[in-house]
Amino acid sequence: MDATDEGMHQKERFAVAILALVLKHDLEFQRDFLCKVCGYCEAEEVKRFLVELEVAGCGDLVLRTENDSEVYIFEFKIRADMQGHNQDPRKLEFFASAKGYGAGIKDRYKPDGKARRATYIVIENDATDLSLTPEKIPECVGKSWRDIGKCTYDHEDRTLVLDLFKSFGLLGIPEFIHMNTKNISLGHGDTTLSAVKLCKVLEAVAGHFGSKPKPDVELDSQGGYIGLNFIPNDSEEWYKLVQPKNRIIGWFGYAQYASSTLDVWFYCGNAKAAAQIHELLSRRFSEAKVSPPDAKNNVLISLLAEKSKDNQEWFISVFETLVQRK
Image 1 (cartoon, rainbow, N blue to C red):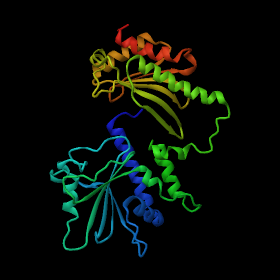
Image 2 (tube, rainbow, N blue to C red):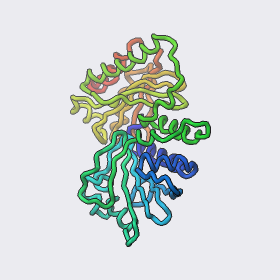
Image 3 (cartoon, one colour):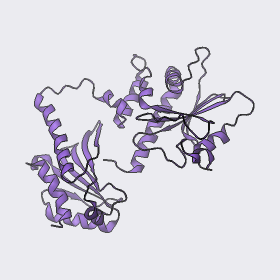
Image 4 (tube, one colour):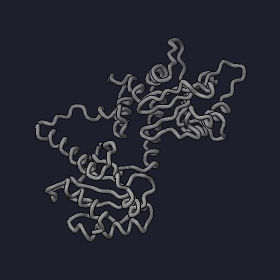
């Protein structure tokens, strides 16, 4: 349900931080990572690389030898796209702009007669082809989280790496989600059927309003949720009321923490819009909990699942209450 750019950025920062920790403390993993992700597979006298986080003007993570003879600079993305003005080497600004990472890398790791090599690697859910770039220094490579998943972890003494991969799964990185669903048995066929039905209900509600985003699923040690961002086709009325900061009006779905709930979030663009929606929902849905607008002007209405006989109808009634101003 963390739909904000800031929330996603924090997930990426945490993922990079724990990766850096394991790269520092597990030399075997570092060697495996260098070979399978960076393409540096020197068998003899493999040196321990220095690990640096958030190097200004360069990237999220840097692996380098002490004399900078080999330097690998990483930018990590979970769901967000590369920022065109400074992170994307397919854009000239990457190499030419004062804030461009390519320019920053060339400035920090200047060739000075030594056999230095700097490689910029972007890690995404699906690798981007970066073979065609306006300039060739630094070398730019697109990789995926699957490449990191190829690194070894299934030995008794590799618990740190195993914990790393499980943490990636909890952060919603698709390649690693399976790490936290092993050895789970749904013992009853109707449980599986219920999960399918939940997805179908959400799809049906989205279809009713012409909204067709991808499912949003999260799982952690406290519980989890499944839902969809709400981006209606008939947008004029919605945008006039909610005044969101982007195309996403809100989010709706199921949550399972202390209890099972049907939740709908509205991402309002200002306090006035949030107050109006809060008042409309509070007046119409006495059986549900309508939380006051939070610091970001988001409004949540939450209904205990046991109080809803028809989930689809309830979700639709929440949205239509606002559109029709009932």
